[in-house]
Every structure is written in C-alpha cells, then in structure tokens.
Length: 46
Image (cartoon, rainbow, N blue to C red; front, side, top):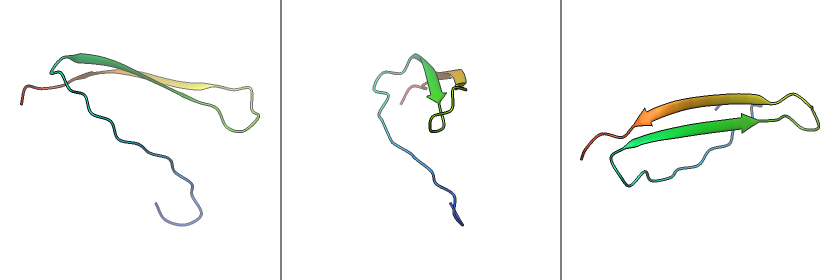
C-alpha cells in the first residue's frame, strides 16, 4: 500500500483440497453499517 492508507492482512493454510465458504465482515470504527462479502473457494489438488 502507498500513501496514508491502512491495510490489514493475514495468511492461513487451507489443508484439504475441498470447497471452502469464506465470509468477511467489515465495520469501520463506531459506524453501525456492516459490509459483508461471501464467496466460495475450491482448493485444487496438489
């Protein structure tokens, strides 16, 4: 990231080659609004 932007990140291992449902919820500060992203990831075979 460049400039004054703040970003957060993390890494995790998806051990089994199967379908994963991932849901991310984001709330900024004391704001009541909740942003939600949901998606499915199919981990391929090694």
